[in-house]
Length: 225
Ligand SMILES: C[S@@+](CC[C@H](N)C(=O)[O-])C[C@H]1O[C@@H](n2cnc3c(N)ncnc32)[C@H](O)[C@@H]1O
Image (cartoon, rainbow, N blue to C red):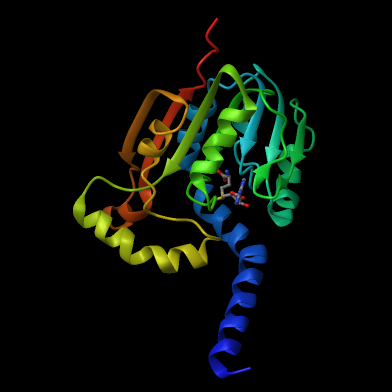
């Protein structure tokens, strides 16, 4: 084996280790703060019935599930994130069960959910268009998709920094991209976009490549009679 192949193999193993053991902890450090908790409360406010949470992570939305939620299916591929979620899940009023991925697809039955919620996950899932097709698949007709995501900013200078920083950010944060145009991706899916609020989070401006947020709701059209 030549030197380049060895370096590539070791780099691949190091990244795999970091994504399994380091990135979930780093993610929690960054997305568990008082600014983001306000947005979490808003995006969770209208959840009801049977909910699927895509990219459950360490369960940081659990405290914000309203009383109208009857059960939650947590789609989370990381064993470490799921283990870290247990202290929030334990003793909750709402039963939370874990679903894995079958290949790249959430192992969740078709049309089983009243709502799907995704926070800071459409940035990370490798095939985001396929993920949105799965959102449509698991929602019952009329069901709603609630999202809180960061992504491509409207300002050219911020976008330029997002493109520059993305390769390093992606390695550090378990595959997370900075440049996904979340509103356009949802609008291009088979969901109907009902509302979307976009803004930079109220934090120092040098953080803008990371803090342009999209919070919104879309629905799966009811079947024609
Ligand atoms: C940045 S974290 C966000 C976690 C959580 N939603 C939150 O708001 O704190 C992204 C999560 O997406 C999960 N993830 C990665 N690929 C996924 C996939 N294909 N389907 C569902 N979740 C995935 C990761 O394991 C990680 O927990």
